[in-house]
Length: 248
Length: 139
Image 1: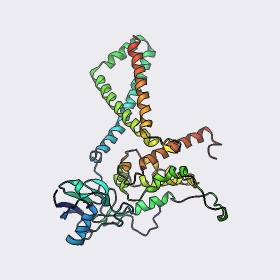
Image 2: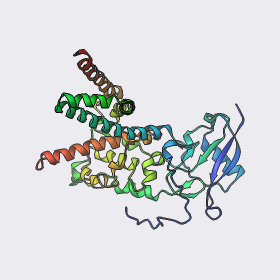
Image 3: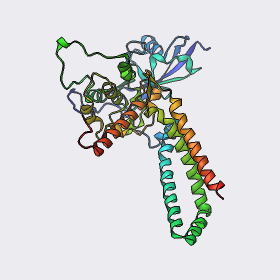
Image 4: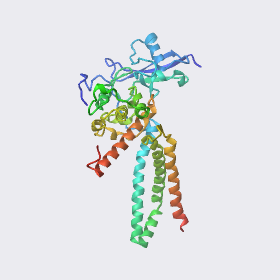
C-alpha cells in the first residue's frame, strides 16, 4: 500500500477568482485515516488557508459532509485507503451555494427544517401535575428511525429535485416532519400538512431514492416521503368519501 | 420561507454551480430514474393500444382484421416491442420500490422488504400466465 495519497481539493476564494479551482496535496495515508484526517493534515502542515467545516469526527455532528469523488459523504466516515492509489477529489456539497473552499451556505436548509415545526405540538397541554407523556417501546419504534437524522445535508446534495428546484422542502425536512407526526405524543400533523402538502412540499418528490442511499444514519427519507404521500392521499380520499367524519 | 436570519439570500460572492441539462447522465441511479419516468409514456401507449383493440373488436370483423393488419406493420411492431421492454422495466422497478412506501408492522417488528416485494412478483407471474393461457390455450 502506498504511504501517501494525492488529495485534489476544490478551492473557492470569493475575493479572488469567480470560479472554483483545484489544489493538489500529497498527504500521508495510514490505514485508519479518513478524508477529514487528510484535510486536517493539509490545514495543519501544507496550507493553513483551507476552509471546511468539521467538529466531532465520529458521525454525530453532521458538519463534515462533502463531495468525495463525486459522492456526497461524511468525510469523517470515508477512509482514504478506500480510494486505492488516489487521487481523492474533495468538493463542497452539491446543490448549495459555496461560501469559501469547502464551506457551503445552509440558511435555506435551516429555514426548511424550522418550517415543518419540528417540535411536539399539543392541542392542549396537560397540567404538570398529571406527569409526563408516556410512550411504549412500540410507539417509540414507530418514529425512532426518523429521529436519527444529524442534519448533515447529504440527502439534499444527492437530490436532483432540490438541485433543479431549490424551493422543494427536501428529504430531511419531510423525514423530520414524519418523525413528529408518528410520535404518539404529537398532535400537529394537520399543522405540518399545510406546509408539506403545499406546492413545494412532498409532492415535489419524484422518488429518485438517492437520499436514502447516501444517508449515513439509515434514516430512509425516501421511504418517509412515500409513506407520507400514501397517508396523505388516503386522507384526501377519506375526506371526499366522508366529508363529515374523515377527521376526528 | 421566512427570511428573518439577517443573511442576504442571494449573496453576490457565493458560488452557485449551474446544474447541467444532462445531470441525469451523471449517475447510474439518475439514469434509471429518468428511464422509469419515461416508461410511463409507454404505459400510456399500451393503454391507448388496448382501447383501440377493444374498439376494433366492437366494430366487427372487418375492423378487427384491419386492426390486426395495422398491428403487423413493422413500425408498430417495433414500437410495441420497445413498449414491452419499458413496461417490464417499469413493473420491476415499481415492485422493487413498494417496500419503501409500505411499512407493514407485525407484532411491533417491521416486515422485511422481501415479503412486500415478493407477493407483487408472484401475483404478476400468475396473472401473466393466466392471460397467456387465455390467449394461447383458448385456441
